[in-house]
Length: 164
Image (tube, rainbow, N blue to C red; front, side):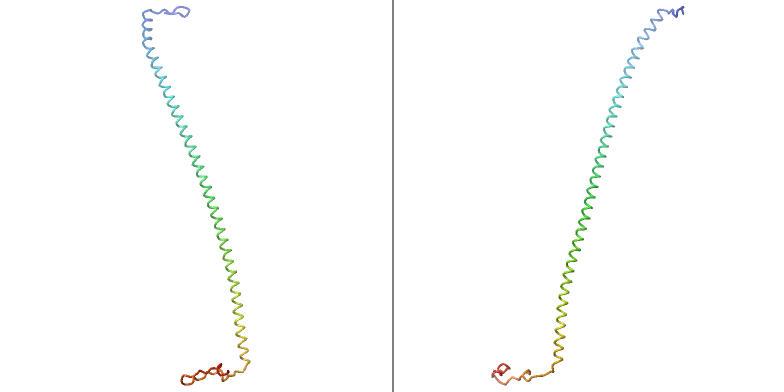
């Protein structure tokens, strides 16, 4: 029942009964609330640990990717240097071979020029002898003929032995 001034009249036995029910229910509710709070905290801790692990793993992968990228970049730079050096070496080898070939050909040209001069001198000498022979009358001397050998074991007569 309601009284003026906002007051109520409640049966004492009923009030005691409600209080007793509250005493029985509230500790269970508090226990459940504490249990839920503990579960919530445990889930938060697990989520935090999982988040930390995910971040650590992501950081590791990022560093590994960066390291791999650095290794790849360094390998590419080294490969580029090797190719540059190989090209420079190839150019130097080709230039050296060209220089050697040029020098060899120049020496060969000099030798051919000398041989040509020797051949030309030989041809001139032959032509000169032919010209001189053509201008002289052909004479055969008796001394130029071979002599028959005397029979027997005597002394051989030759031009030198006859003239002396």
